[in-house]
Length: 407
Image 1 (cartoon, rainbow, N blue to C red):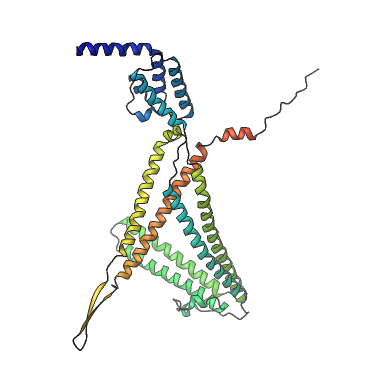
Image 2: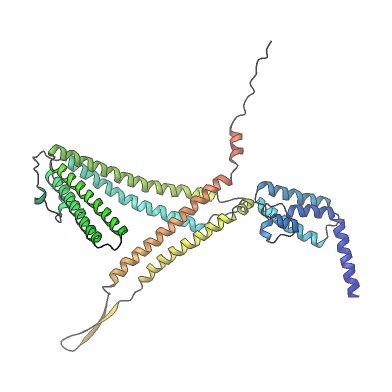
């Protein structure tokens, strides 16, 4: 009885398959539409990975949809279980491919917001540096004219006094001396390096190492000669020349500080603009997701590794704040004792390391988020919008030009 029942079921299935033969033809064509399917799979009639059935372009999606619609029109036995199962699977794939899906992530937006906050903080701090540079420039412009003497090279100190930097802009003499000490220090340092390279060349074990050390020695001697020439040039300057040099130096400093401040502001603005663009462009069609799933996989790995490293740095920094103090027991002259806790002086190094790790973690988090958002926003703008269609609508059609016919 069981064998007869199985034969009847198989006969019914074959009959249903024959009734739906044309519909199955359309289903097969729909199933093998995607360009992700290999030639070998097409010849075998079997797809090894169901993910490869997903269409990767709008044209492939529309073709699959059309084949499914045709199958639905010609099916003669819609109750065929195998047909229904295959049709529903392909229909779900087509429907998913046609829809737009949200791919943007809150964690990346949080990283961009943190980055914008960091740039804002440094921009406000940079404003103080710009103001300080402008005050110093004004201080130099107010110098009184005095006679500026020369200093013999062997009489010039090789190191600055402790207050030399803060006093260098108070007069032309102090500024000139500050520059002379700089160049003498650099020249002597280069000569010292040249002597060390000569010693290494004399004891080199191979010809190649000897030639390398001699080349470095020559470079250091050239640097020493250049610094000495600059020393002599500045030493010969009078007040007007020193004043002009100082004004140029301070003008460049103001320019550099302002440029640095503008860079910080521009990065902050960039991140604030990037956030809404990232969200707007983060709704690709399903077929676009399929087409670039390898790129998405690479971005996902980069995000996980970057965020993992940032979490490690930040977490390690936080964990260091839990380091315990140590107990100190004090015995007094009357024999009484007391116990209190004190911080371990060695923890100062740990505190510095803790702050450094937390800052590094924050910067890594912001960097990874901004890089991924920039890449995904760029491709989102290119791939998720029909720019050519919009341009055609915006551009007025060209009017035909009447060409006069020859008589």
